[in-house]
Picture 1 (tube, helix red, strand yellow):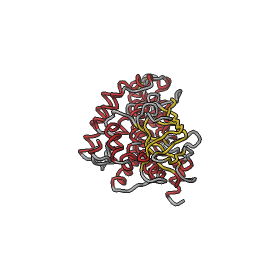
Picture 2 (cartoon, helix red, strand yellow):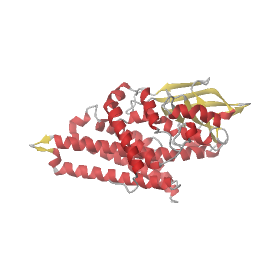
Picture 3 (cartoon, rainbow, N blue to C red):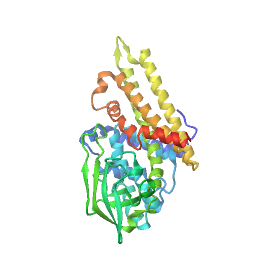
Length: 380
């Protein structure tokens, strides 16, 4: 669907991304997913394109400008490779660089951002805990001040990129109960007392490493506190907004991949002497799938416009994330049905997307939490 928000610059950016994904990622996505990792050179090649540099000053390796449409175009196009784990493998840094850029000291920015944005090193956001899930305000990982250091104890889990990252943005409780007692810290992989355990046997996202992080008296310099003590919860919530609209754009890209493959199969596959696409039942499925895609795209575009206008439409982002994940679930299921038994075999974009769809409904804020957030933001 043609967008009224498209500009020559945005169109050129999308073409660059689409060409890169088609030539450099999609042909290898299945092999990387089966192998359980992507080559580190992919991080560096994407870094050279500047895909993680939005909203970060050029002196720290960023692009020096921001554009929500271009951010979402990247998330959409990389999702079209049909293997969500490939995008997850490289994009753990995308949700962890903003707190460093906005809240870190200049020394921390200079040490972390150029290396991470270029793809030479990885970074991860460490918020989710084994017993907490989406209940961020009640995290139990603690940090106590000890002279010129902070000492961190606790665990984080389901951390994307957790086994390979060099830097971690970690939420920890420095005060009393609730959201006002949470702070953010930069922790480096080599810190004494820090360890990590791989989470294997996942249903999807095989190409992305996922970890549980262990903090056993981890000492970090006092200057590794990101921002003000006790203000970490607000920073986490602000950071979630870009993550959630990015995930919605990822759902959109995955839907488009499923639709393309379903149409191609329906044109090729013959039943009872005629192509599938001539069957009314199949054509209706495709029309319904296309409608979900169009609606999700319209939501993403409207939210991007609002964000570029300086607004933070929290309720709309939350609703869009739920609508996007639900739409992806529908489109992937219908695409699988069109392909029949062939769609159930590993190795195709539809099978992987159908298997991975639930992580989009859970990660970044579950559908249930998003609905409640939207309702509260609406004053209901």
